[in-house]
Image (cartoon, rainbow, N blue to C red; front, side):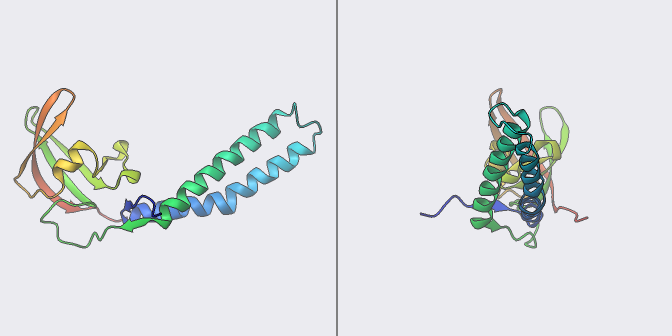
Length: 161
């Protein structure tokens, strides 16, 4: 059975690969050491440090498994394609036509979405509406408060650091 495909930008792929490396090669050693030190204190049934370290170990194991699943089923988007159409990886400047407000977003796969960094999922209502649009297009997005209209002002690529 093939798992879910995770769509990532090259930047997102590197972030998740770095996190997996850190968890497997650094964090896991720290947790193992904490468990070893807690065991040395004696009675494990009432040892809070041991219980906390074992719980953290379970959480890290789960995250490692999640990352390995994601990286096994990843599709990295080609961000070198032309900027004339909004696609995953595009930076988009849009205007909320009701409030006359400009907004900037990067369209990313669902696992990379982070609204604090203006990275919206291609699966979100706004992301879905923007995919395939071109500069000048007006897109309508159904929101709980009703329909919101946006105009696509500019399509670009994310600047690499």
